[in-house]
Length: 444
Image (tube, rainbow, N blue to C red):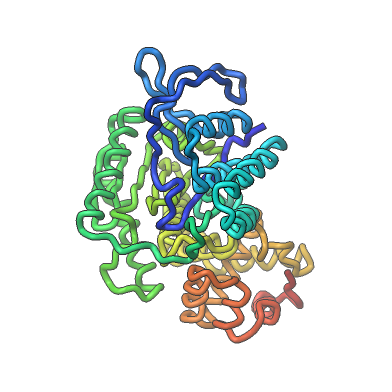
């Protein structure tokens, strides 16, 4: 069975496979069935990493997420859409998509797609190997963290395998600087998406635009401006922490943010607009291969908990856009997101409380992190531990911590980056961390 949440295929900034929707011209006749055996009939007019547009006999267009389609039908539909002139890039994209579907029939189909890519270009073997490696390191998030926070960079989420730029270009290539015209176009694209959201989810959404955010909400004016202000404050704090020049805009245009009064609207938004199962989450950050960042929440009745989720998810968007598309480890991503929430909202969960809870968890495990450092997605109990470890790293050498993130985003293996920046292997550093937590020994 296909998972309700599929890890979307993500490219380096200059990648072409899923950089945007591919228009199918002429439209492709479709007659197939989804995972629930619902009939899908009409014409495919366009497709991308998330799904395809299906036009029915009356001209109505429905967005069908790949998560709804059986793997064998995904393969057949895309093969037909490619046509006889399919190139290696297209087969690589299909293989990567299938590789991230939790169905026993998907991996053989992915291998078939990769073989087709090799037939088109025998030099893509290294790229295929990297796709597979990155797929193992960046599958979709399934476990919610504390307080309904989604997973990293994607958040019960959307960030999946990264495909290197076709032709062997480095995944670590920096996000490109945009011209004024490109920035304006990106903002216009985001507003167009927001208008579709208003039409399909909630026509009461209003735009509050800042220098860095397009903030759409149906909250009353006073509250909307309050939360808009928190996001600007958080962004300024991140810019300061990462030593970026004041006023620097790292977003592609601006980050697109939705805050819904009702949980039902939030859930409908995730399912309809992003083809994502929100589960029990209170917020998600969707980070896309083309550099776009969409963040959405519903207004939890607990104000501080809502503020915490808002900061947490927005940090994930910032990390995605920082330097390059290279993903960071789950414990690094979640640790930083929780750490900044702790810094900005000390009255919600203080440093003392978080450290005490983390120490109690480590005491119960005998000091073992139980694979947290290598986990694709850390467990809920590990969030506090990751936060405390992040806090300890920043207290020890703040500049080294920032340079550690920078090194990872430049493509350096994380353990090498850690040892170079902190002057010791991670295992030795964990000894000091354990002592700070009054734990005899902290191990992986």
